Image (tube, rainbow, N blue to C red):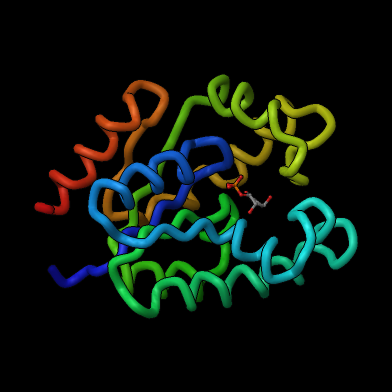
Length: 168
Ligand code: S3P
């Protein structure tokens, strides 16, 4: 197989981490959640990073972490929802991985992200923020090799759909 990593992209709350863990367990590959690596490297939460250093600083670190995670192969990389906005990130994802976009309907996303205080871009009126950002990012995930709606499938079904498509 030419593509030796699987990169999960998609809006917040579409299940990238959950699916990534399950895929990694199934394949025996490493799992990297880029947000977790960023928090560990910076010694602060994503929310504090946005508040104290600003989003551009977060995006710079995010690009480096994505690049580093894709270096070795046999890695499932769950990226942050906004990682696809930078062209250099999209390029390295496509070059080094099989890119899977996870989607979910707006209501499912709102329910999932409402339970989490560590998503600075959807604080306040969560529903309004989600709808606005979904509109802004309507085509941001279109470059993926495969697209899967996670609001209608179980995690195991999603894993099987991905592996079947990749012939793994
Ligand atoms: C972001 C999504 C978050 C995190 C940060 C910014 C975004 O990751 O990277 O809050 O711009 O959509 P998740 O998609 O894992 O929530």
